Amino acid sequence: MQAIKPITTTWRQHDDNMTAAAPTQLLVVDDDPALRLMLRGVLELHDYQVHEAESRSTALSLLDRESK
Image (cartoon, rainbow, N blue to C red; front, side, top):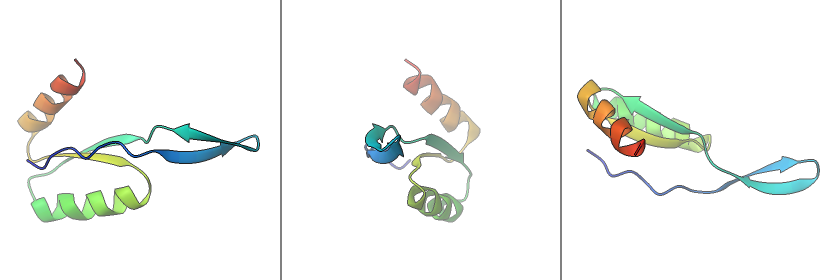
């Protein structure tokens, strides 16, 4: 499984002030590595933080670890 990339800061404008906003995190679950790579590339272009899992069990384990 590919390592989770560090969080990057994105900036959004609110009422003429620039404020740092945490990126939206998404979990892509698919057994096709090429599809995961393509989705990761597209989503990261739109400032999403992407996590990947190749199976349902891996995804559930990752979610369990992240929730602690």
